[in-house]
Image (cartoon, rainbow, N blue to C red; front, side, top):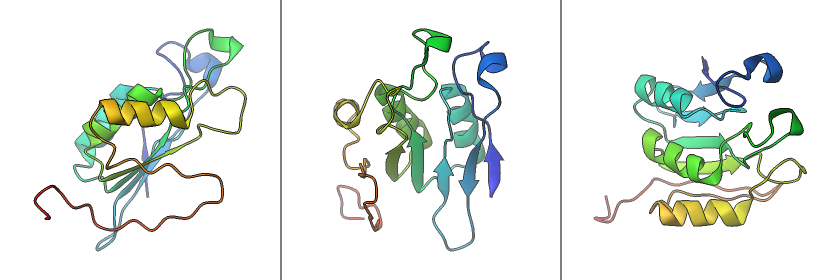
Length: 145
């Protein structure tokens, strides 16, 4: 398990939001899993992508969480940013988390579907409801490989 950079909100708000951390879980002969934590920084995503060139599963905290403390700024990734993070990480599978059940989320499953569709990444998106289970198989490209 490796702690990774994360930033809960835009630059300059760290004194208000406090420190946060993401994680990469990796082991020989197992998929590499990135858990973004409460990250809203694409710079942090780029740092993870640079250090870990293969991300099999990305669990991205999305939902564009907002709080009056930061006005219009987001504490977590927007749907469009989650799709862009998926592209930058070249993640085989993307499981958004942290996008439903709380009032401070400003985007949900519909916005995530739209963002991933617009980005041409619907084949990577795995939307789960609370308590739902999924088994992920190998990602197959258009050539069947």
